[in-house]
Amino acid sequence: MQSSPFCITFGSPLVGDVKLVEAVGRENWANNFCHVVSQHDIVPRMLLAPFESISESLVAILPYWQGIIANDNEDEPDYFIQDACRTLLNNVLQYTHTVANYEIDSLMKLDGVNERSPYKPFGTYMFCSSEGAACIDNSEIILKMLHLTMQSHEKPSNEIVQDCFSEHIGYGSVLKNVIEKSTVGKSISSPGSESSYERGISLQLEAIGVGGQNDHARIFLQNGGNIENKLNKNFAKLAIELSEAQRSMAELEWYKERCEKENGITYYDSFRKLDRKDIDANLRRVKLALFWDEVIEMWEKHELPSDFQSKNKWIYAGNTYSRLVEPLDIAHYYLTSKGNSNYLIDGRSTRHKVLQKWMEEKENSRSSKSKKPRTKFASLTQDSCFWAHVEEALKDLENLKQGQYQKLQRLEMFERYVTRMFNERKISCEVFLEESSFMMWWTEWKQHKKNESPEWSSPLSKIMEIESWKGLNWHAI
Image (tube, rainbow, N blue to C red):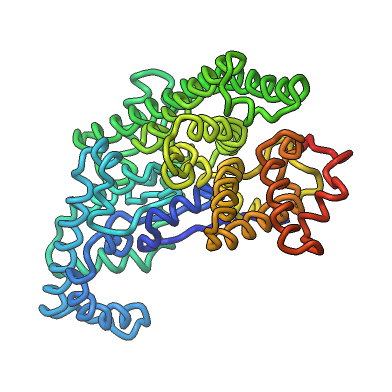
């Protein structure tokens, strides 16, 4: 069994971009990273500034700093070193200020950090000062506090290097001070009422060295809390709507079963004709599309918690939706489209693409890679675009009969695709119903190949000849 990492850093610079943040979220590792940051340590803030704005100063400062670390240099920094430190500090403060002074709602919508720096914090940050420590796990608030906890740095120039760099190598003393402060009973109250909530914010600000009376920081923390509450309310609202959507899903599953048992055809082929009996299914299809479009829109507008995409419940709900309903979207597309339209190129909706991406990211995570291959066949074909591939294969076969021999390669690829789906147990039994579109394609394709070569055979032809799908268990999702 694979174990999750647990990582504690001390004065670490920002090391990841938004892709790393998303990857950590998909693995549910966000709570496994704790970054300890001292109030005036410049290193955790440095990479918010462009490299060209800090490189020259660093080249001048690093030899002196390395001498301090090795205890080979206890001399006071000369004017040149002090000036380089001042320049470095000013540049870093300037860029952290630029990042921090985006309003929090603008940060969420525009992601201004990424416009100026590729780095983004993840995990929990423990901000330490002489007054104690406080933990923050909201990335936008972390960026703000990286600036606010350092901006009050008002010391003579010959002490700038001492704090900015000595704190980076003095985390033993920093933690000792935090422990001492915690033992004297100074802690953050749980927000049980408005007054205790306000008191909690004050204690947090005092602990990280910003000051409990810093109105700007107080408002920012309050706004951050309000936004978190709003995101959680949006999430709770969608959870209720998901329960309603599940009822529509159940009704479509009954529709699917009824088409197969009562009419002997796939629900795809039945919907392709869109008779009166299919009207209710179409209403359910449209209703579910509106729901998942709302989910995707809220996610893209950052109106849901940051870990929403990594929640298994929503990943699997979206995946099941696509596998059940996208065949109906495909049927509706080919029923209503004109000319030589291709669903895979022109018709597939954004919601299905996004839900597929979420599922693929989940399947590529460490927790999913260890899963064993399927041993039972699927009750829903795993590739929700399967019927679009069938439609294109039917068109390609017709074109091949009319002399467009370049279609032969695509048809052979489709045959291999179906064979692979069958061997990997990713195809559903209704595909092989006698009057299905797939069986129509297979009958014509087999006849074409037999006309070319009476001895023709292929892995798929052997599966079809012995009807390998009969009598197997098809009830595993």
